[in-house]
Structure formats: C-alpha cells, structure tokens
Length: 383
Ligand SMILES: Nc1ncnc2c1ncn2[C@@H]1O[C@H](COP(=O)(O)OP(=O)(O)OP(=O)(O)O)[C@@H](O)[C@H]1O
Image (cartoon, rainbow, N blue to C red; front, side):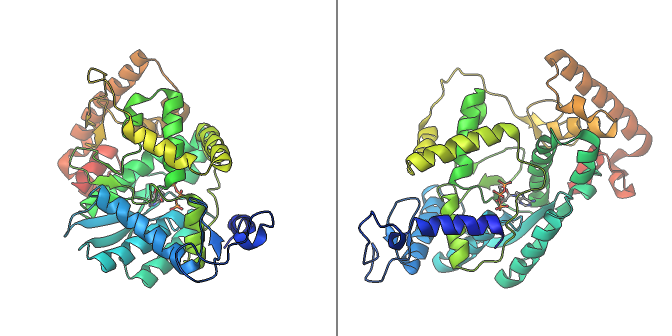
C-alpha cells in the first residue's frame, strides 16, 4: 500500500475501539463473541474482521438484489482501473456471483488513458488481478480510440481542462469497450463518497437532468448501450480501503498525476467535512437524491445519437467529437470553453460539413478498415 493509503489505515485504526480511551472499549464484536478489530466508519459498530467482511458483502449483495441490477446469463463488463474501488468491485462481484449463483459472465474492461507513471503502473496491478481472479481482461487505449494519449492532450491543452477531456473520453471509451465485449451491463466502482459528491455537484450547478439520475444504481443510457451499474453506491470509501487492506487485495493506490477537477474538489471537501461531523450524512445525501421527483413538465434533454460517431448525445455532435475536433484543429481550449449557443451550433455545423466531405473523399464505410482515425470511422469499426 502506498503512503497516503497507509495514512488512511492508521487514521481508521486510531478510531478503533482499542485506541479510544474516552469511549468504553468494547470487548465483543457487535455480531459475535470475538474481539473487535475495527469500528465501521459507516455505522460506528465495533466488529471483528470476519463480521466486517460478512456485513460489507451482505450490503453489496443487498444493493444488487434490491435494484435488480443483473439478470442470470448476462455478461457484465467491470470497468477496472487497477485502483482500490474497481479492484474491490471485481473481487466482490466474483465472490457474490459464486456465492449466490447470479449466473453472470464477468469480464474486466480497462481504459488506458496514456498517462505515464500512473495508468501504466495501475494496469500492471490490474494484470495481476486478472490472474488472481481468473477474469479475462481487455484493454482499450485513448491512443487507438482517439489518436491522442492524455499526456499529449495535456501538452496541447494545458492542465486546466485535462479532467474534461479525460472524463468525456473515458465515458465513451467504456461504452465502446463494453459494446465490443458485447456486454449487457457495465459495472463501475463508484462508491458512496463519489455518488454523494456528484449529487452535491449537480445541485450546486443546478443541473436537474443529471441530479435526477446520478444516485440511481442502474442508469440506462439508451442508444443500444449497456446499462451502467454501481454495486458499491452505498459503500463508504473508508470501508473499501479497509476491505482491500484486510483481504490483502493487490491494487494501485496513487492519485492521478493530473490533479482532480477543481469544481469536484469543492464538492469532495464539503462531503468529507459533512461525513466527519456525521458519518450518516453520505447515506442521507444519496437517499435524499433517490427520492427527488421532478415536475412532469420539467424540460429534460432529449437523447439522440451523434451524427459523427453514432454514440449517444443530446446534441447533433457529441462532446467527445467536439473535444477531438478542438485537439485535431489546434484549438483545444475553444472546444472546452463555454461558447455561446450560436457559436457552438456553428462549430457543430462546420464539423458535420467537414465530416461529410472527408467521408466522401477518404472513408466511406470501408474507411475504418483502412485505418482512418476519424471518430466517424472509429464508430464504424466498432459496429
Ligand atoms: N481507466 C479506467 N478503466 C476502466 N474503468 C475505469 C477507469 N477509470 C475509472 N474507471 C471506472 O470508473 C470508476 C470511478 O472512477 P474514478 O475515476 O472515480 O476512479 P477511482 O475512484 O479512483 O476508482 P478506482 O479506485 O477503481 O480507480 C472506477 O471505479 C472504475 O470502475
């Protein structure tokens, strides 16, 4: 485990019953006769290691069953980065699939964004997980899908907007990867902290459309894409770290070299603060978001398909294609910036005209086979 994760473990151990003189030390685990080894960050219960495993696994099973996340016979692509959340997710899905006979065909799906010294190392950890869990791993790279690595994007666009590029590309890359694997579902390791942050962020942005679905355990993207599932949506990040630690799971613990997005950082700090004051706050934020109902006449964006790459989009041209166009035309910042509705429309119109011309000149439907890296051709290659 890397230093910052060890720090978290020490912090958690410091909060354990043995180390807390002012609290009455508990002699017995909350659920059995054994000595407690930790205090659960989520519930405050003093528990032994085995009962912690049992509770954590039972809660994940309950999340899966209560939201009817999977059906027997489905192929599930697990978005796996080699980090703690997705490593725990892969381990849990394999364990629960066998224990409860879900009947799922599990695959590991990784996206290599091309960040030297970060993703290459985490993929090494993931390859070890592939072997230890015996789940087949497929890796897609930004370089192959978009013609750019994130290191190159950062060199071209600077560090201010790197999370925008990376997030938009990764979302689509995971959809494309899952489509390639013919997966029915795409499971990700988003945990309770991630979901609570997203709820707060969407609330602060006044983004009603995203707020209405960001706390759902299963989200249907439409357009023939596999539904996205979050089996760890009620699992606290601290408990995921403890679970991985006690199970001795092999994962890569370093943060991305390109700092996290500024705005999400505010939401994260706020949520962590609230959790410190009252641990149940995370769950309450998620449960509150699940209950929100929108007026039936509220205008929601209508989902369609991008006319360039064929993936789901609420605009004629999707965000990934717009960002890619900015990079390829040497104007990456323009693509990220908040352009007026009018100039955004003009840019999309120009892209559609250019794409029509290019396709007629070089690609057609056979373009993908000839190695064109344009997004329209990449989509044709996928389909
Ligand atoms: N490069 C990737 N390849 C495949 N899946 C990914 C990748 N990056 C993120 N994901 C999926 O999205 C989830 C949330 O991503 P996020 O960027 O928040 O990472 P994280 O919280 O560090 O998770 P992890 O600990 O799994 O890396 C991950 O748990 C994983 O399922």
